[in-house]
Length: 253
Image (cartoon, rainbow, N blue to C red):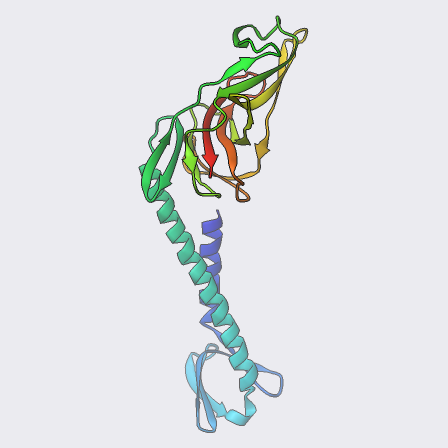
């Protein structure tokens, strides 16, 4: 839609730029296709009469005429550049898409080479440190955590504003989160368990991101709105309240 509007704007302005107002000092104007100053005369092509005519130069407000023509040309040049940039960005997107596998997962292009991130193992623990994933509801009441092993991710990313490609496995929610290192683990999310209602509430440290859909089959580009400080992070895909989160962890250095 944005590309179509840009094309329409360029087309309209191109057509309108073909006609200029040759302003007269008495306040009127002639609608012209083009004009030239030749000595003490201004020669112009009249749009109304479809013929070349001329008028004494001292009757024409050339300063106003030239200023408007220059301003219109500048606007048209900017729109044409925007259209060219849009086309270049579209070509770049197509080239990127061709490099990303269609298998569900997280990917990066680093120096134009594909980097594949493996999904991290995650375990749910209660306050006693037990793995309670298979018996969360209704047996366990209170709090639990979803953790991934190790205090630091082995996946180092040196770009503070990294771009990731995420191919969804299903139409689920996704995002970028910050992980909290603890003793021997990194916390992915906090889980509140309500056995009577047989519900679970999940809390994550969400990082604001920009996202762009690249295809109709669930391929997205995701990147942080602001540069990331050094620390532990992950791209995640999940269904709220199901504790089915998939985690692709990385470390910013």
